Amino acid sequence: MNNLKQKIETLKKEKNAIILAHYYTLPEVQEVADFVGDSLGLARKAAETDADIILFAGVHFMAETAKILNPTKKVLVPDMSAGCSLADSCKAEKLAEYKKKHPGYKVLSYVNCSAAVKALSDLIVTSGNALKLVNQLPQDEKIIFVPDGNLGDYINRMTGREMILWDGACCVHDHYEVEQLEKMKAEHPNAVVVAHPECRREMLEKVDFIGSTAAMLNFISENEAKEFIVVTESGILYEMQKRNPDKVFHTLYEGAPDHDCINMKKNNLENIYQVLLEEKPELLMDEELRRKALIPIQRMLELS
Image (cartoon, rainbow, N blue to C red; front, side, top):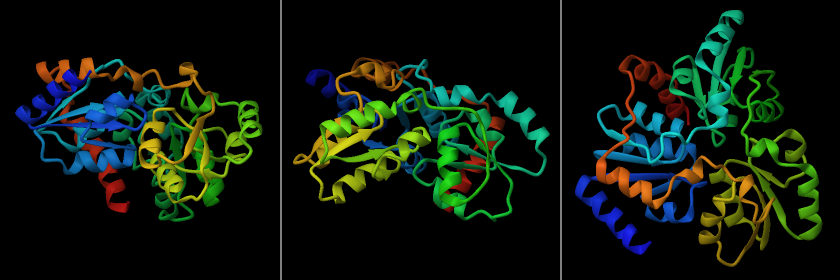
């Protein structure tokens, strides 16, 4: 493994390449990344990089966002099949029809959506900035929120809005069960519970802190507690433990990989090395689509 890591580092220097990775990827992938973050952090990093090549270790929509922000750079994807259930739940054709039925409504899209859906949107948000951005919009603004109904419901409750919510959900967070959380809390009565807002309402009502992956990391580092139950994808534990070696972390389903994001786990050292070596597969995008999708992303970055 170390030899492969060295080869990757050598290729990065030779090709002026940067590796961006999400917190949910494998620990060894995070170790070779130049920047590890949540969707908002990764979007910001992609917007400011001076690298010639961006290798995105995450899922497909994240690489698309990098390409939208960097049309002249080569964006590489270790596995093109690494998709997202949220992005898949909202097709651009259906959203276009929905918009026609709701004239006068603004479309707010969670970043977990395709470039085609972004192109139909008025504003993009992430789990890290959604509350802040929605609160900046006029109270009488009519909003359609896509594609995550759970995140939309959370935003509605926190802001007092009544957005129309798309019926989409993360196949990982939406399947977390209250019974399992209660079991873990009983086993670890002193643990503080943190959760991602992609979880269902009944889960969020039973936790101590709700936030994006970056927000959870900051909360845990600043909290005096020594034990935590983490209600999100297990990949985040690598960074949590790295920042807080003196604290203990439990996932909701400890030792159960079937509750992880299989698409995030498709990124590995072998395909990262191969993609860097061959500079393919490369993510390409129609320029007109890219320009349209860029507008709501730029608005997000400006308002954030």
